[in-house]
Image (cartoon, rainbow, N blue to C red; front, side, top):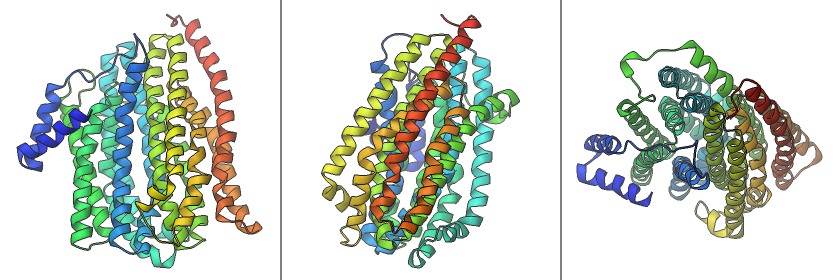
Length: 485
């Protein structure tokens, strides 16, 4: 992977800038037709890591869009600007997670077509995805730019923060069609095991984002507007390159721009699986937005400290998501092919890898919290709130693997609504009640943060139980239909 990253940078330098870089990148993609992974036969550990590691790197680079904004604003602007950028994270996630859920539906549907070796159905799903990505992105852009400030006012965003926060949020919403196109395109590639090229694409966008951050904010002094514009520019490059890859792709996941069409059957399958996953993420983020409102009630220092600590939670979350996506893709293909025992092995392996990697890395961050928080801020009023969130939330985040992995496995089996309902009840409802109760009992910031590990335990136990029940039902149905091989 390091070699490929170096090669990507070399292409940029040798070709002499962004214009020729696109052509050079296209040539690289054309030379690398063997980006898929055999999910149906052979050992699992190596292919799972080949699938997950680029996804982890992708998540880190993707989160670095916002982290770079937070870092540069924290260094070149006042604390109020840091709070303005950081406080938008849960708001943006509220929308983005809905589309990530639809991406799960795309992944499952296309992967199942590959498992059944139904190339025509896969092509129809890809064509449908192209229209869906554009429609979702444009609709969200329009609604987001209209309601950005009212939403922030509803969340009790501090007065010294709201002007910058609303400016940042409106600009980000303008770039959401780019983000949607990239995420949906990456979901198509993941369905055949190609997680490397989405990473290279995102890396290119990340380089552009950071460079423009430094130019627009560090040099030109544009503040939150500068970092938002830089983020949108990176998104734009990502979307252009992912479309270029799919257009040049051979086989069932080839994207034919001139004949894009919505196919009702494939759209129904994507929505049936993806919409509940997106709804879960939407309600999940909705509860976090209410927690953000409670955090804001502690003042701008609490908002800024929480934003700095939240960065590491998001990094860890993308690590978990990588193994969730591996679970979804591998289980979808193997279940469609009737390899039931291999589905069980996929679940066990990804659960183990997610818990261990998330637990170890988060312990390191908490152990060295002084260093990791100092990257973003050294404000004496902000740091204690950041430390509190690290020890109360980040340290226990590995528990969330229990419901994330098992929920992904259920969606791959075609049961998407069950984990959604359990997660909404087990996590979101409890968090809303907690946000209501804490100020009424004179609660501290630590007490507010403690709701995260509490709800992770409740939801994890419930979703795991449901998974084993659903798995038995799904396997029995497949076997009775003559699908067990």
